[in-house]
Image (cartoon, rainbow, N blue to C red):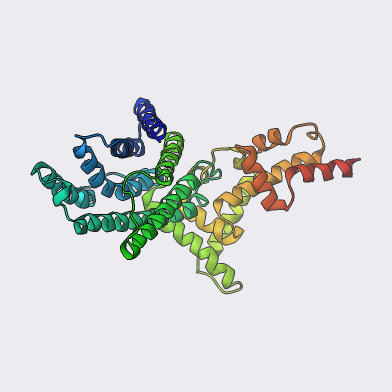
Length: 375
């Protein structure tokens, strides 16, 4: 177990140094550094408690009170990754209140010389309930942000790799899973008085170590994702419009529908002549600038008339481009990945997924059929 604690602490220090050494640290990186510092205090607390080292009660109480910050930090970190305009406001100080109140009470008992012996079990139990409740609330709020974010990116980007934040979603679900185990354990303790070790336990400490590794690895690699706040309502509306349209096929639409359809046909002509989808970094904003319109209007007409989001609309064109190259026969000796990259895809995984969704076949199966037809 000592090896696990020392290894976890070493990993935290390593990740802190990596993040601190980044030339261009964004606000999400800074939040992550603070989070790792707090996690380091938890690992230190587990270590000194496991070895029963005296004189470190101040660290134990610091880790105890700082646990209230994990929920807000997770929420801030999620917002910082998904909103480039995220900045701390004075109102964010309110989220520190539970941790400060806990620290005041815990350090009062510690500095007054009364120590843990005079801190009632009810007070400690109340702190545990409060920490679990706060962590659960902020985890759910963070999942809601990710849910909205996952809807947004498909209306903004033509390449969503490293933008979907699936790793963060899995991490939060893991936190909720551990929270559930802790809640059941607490219930067992209250009903049947089964003792629960507050610090220690192979499962808990292993879970913390895995949490640190995942958070450090993906957190270091992850960059913020540009989603302008002022466009979110318009993009959400355009997506909702698509759902309404699929239910009310044949009904008349707004008076400007003729103008909208004309704009859509102009967009299709632009795609046929200029082939903007070949740009692997094409976004809704970049395309809107090219065709001299607003991103929200462009998203609206794509959703309404193509009945697709921006991501599928662009990648369908890229799939058609690969199919066209294969059907011409001149590029049959080329690798599928080479054709995919030329068509605007940025990875083999994204290409395979889009091709299968568009054609119902894998790229290899489609190429094999083309070769058989040619023969």
